[in-house]
Amino acid sequence: MSGFTLGLVILGGLVLAALVAWNAWTTRRNMPRQAQAPVVAEAAVQPEERSEPVFDVPLSPPPPEKKPGLDALIDVIAPIAVDAAVSGEAALAALPPTRRAGSKPFAIEGRNEATQDWETPRAGQRYTAFQAGVQLANRSGALNDIEYSEFVMKAQAFADAVNGAAEFPEMRDEVARARELDQFASTHDAQLGFTLRARNAAWSPGYVQQSAARLGFVAGAMPGRLVLPAGVQGGPPVLVLAFSTQAALAEDPAHSAIRDVTLSLDVPHVPRSEQPFMRMRDAAIALAASMDGLITDDDGRVIPAEALDAIGSDLEQLYDTLDARDLSAGSVQARRLFS
Figure 1: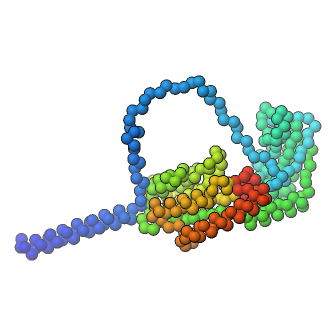
Figure 2: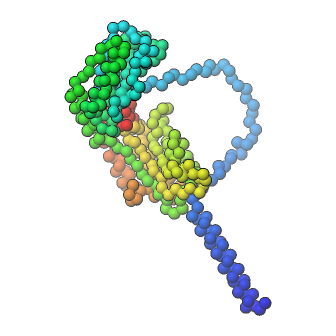
Figure 3: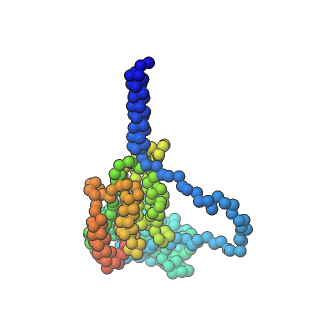
């Protein structure tokens, strides 16, 4: 083989090697970013000292969760008088099969003979009076004539079943009150959302979850949904981080390419004391930095830092308005109205 031919062979080999390397680099570059394996601290693998179980601390079940009651601020309430105490079993049997009148929540409460508290009827208790209620407004709109009529029918059927007498407020007045409340809610509702978009390489579901976990996010009830828990047990999440459900449920999530995630805040549902917008802004900035992403609106326009601060100032005014109406963000009433 001549020197010229040998040189061509060597050159061809180098070109082929370069092409293989380029292809491998391109493939790696286009692969979604993957979560890194957690580093196990040395102390974690050391044998632990044996500890004996302690049996002298009595364990008691947590008290039952107390559901919010009817409130004249956001409910139509019809009192139901009874001649004699009614058992919880009888009240439960008389309840309608559905707890809605149209699109509005409907409820029956009884005044417990022993505690004198209003509560949802329970077996084993006795009740000396009842009240039926239907919500005046929610995000589906104001209570209308048809929904009010359905409320009256359901409440009257319950009253008849427990030998009670129901007294209903004037429909025209309550429907007008519902419209006014709905108008207020419509002009003071706020659901904020930022979109984080990948600059270059896409993200895998595991990479998104690991990045969000560093900021305190945990898995939500649905695939592709992460939440920042409330500071109070049982409260609604402060923030929600969502990405493609299809990517989260893929057979091989490592190869699912996610190019954007949504960070959202339902303002009326989260107390001001949680500082939700500040945490939303900080989380968006931190995620964008760690994941090489951009903070944008729904149309893909980049949101500058000064715009984030302006949104925060506007929210403070909204909080003040809700407080003045006794519908403070995060309160039971606000969460029911803005649902």
